[in-house]
Image (cartoon, rainbow, N blue to C red; front, side, top):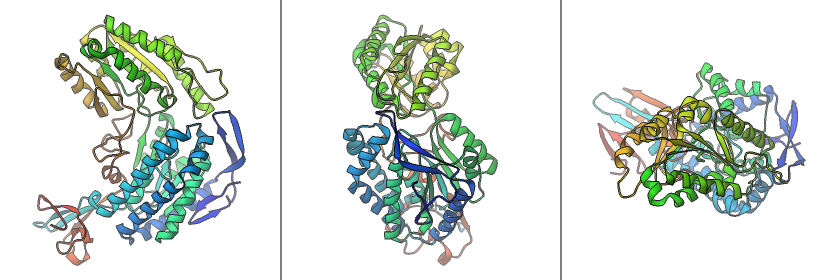
Length: 526
């Protein structure tokens, strides 16, 4: 049985309630070589106690040391790329090249290094000096651990022990308790080994990074509501996220969720006339990328009735029909996609392509395209915008611009929303109303491009209104904004200057920190 990472040591699970094995989704075979423990409550609580002790110690650790840890960890991941990619391939079926070794691991390394740069600069803390009142403020650590639940579809970039939530929480000076996803537990263990090496080499407190593999659902609810847990990051299904949110909210624990999203794409008439075939190709590629297992996959396309719209649907039908079933990450995922498709059909959607569990050696579901007319969609908007986490897309055909706008008005909170329009301005009048309707319903508004692909850059918003996330004001990707989630706003009223954090002292601040001084932005080295 594999050991958990507890307070700086790889420790045998004291009294696991049960064990589990990962699966190879490419072959549907159980990977019996390694058994992973389901920790009982006492063991989970011991992780919390150790992390809380680490949180107190981290309050005295400077940002350069935290940045050095992140840089050291990133370098270790980069050096172990080949082994990490091979193990993740076995547990997820995702291809070693280019997906894992060429794209996802480099992205993971990049975002950890961006988190390190953010920690070192201190800009995320937003130090504010109001000399007239002698009241100053800045963001700082929470003083307790952050619990991170990672998803199944990104074994590195969103992993609980290497992804954006992890890197952001650490950059803010908080320890992390990571729960491994059962779809890739050994991949996560290998990452945790590298993280612990980096903790030791940079002198961080022993409990800064800890890992457990699983626990009973009721223990997960107790964990997120524990009085010593300062915040929670979760990426996964809506039912799981909402259950954790309810428990965390009752305890007053901040919880940042990324849940379901259909990422609607509105294709306007001028765009269809101008380049309908190209748009169809882009939509098909985006929907089927990674077997549709991207949180930004476009699951709903809205067009206005026309001969060009009919041609687009016919093109997409042929493309979906000819596409092979990609590898789904788990057997449970196959059942979930099948259930979602049946729900769409029950709500009035017509099946055009696919619609069945694939007869393959791997976990798979046929790429599936459905269609529905605008009036039917408006009659059951909630049921017809349910997420199917696979290569599944619904095309809603509005009778005119007014009905397209009405469909937009029923869209619930999403990570993204896209509008394709005529490049010569022929759709501009309709675009204005449509974009206004969508703007408050999505975190990221796109023009003339598919939403798959999330750039790790300061301006990125990988978030959105409920139910895509639990809060519309925060992003899970992009530094320094993503770090703010795992911080507290600390205000100092009439505190003597020599007792203030260095970033708030008027004299001799270090680095090139951006500070708001008496209403004007300045830098520490100005």
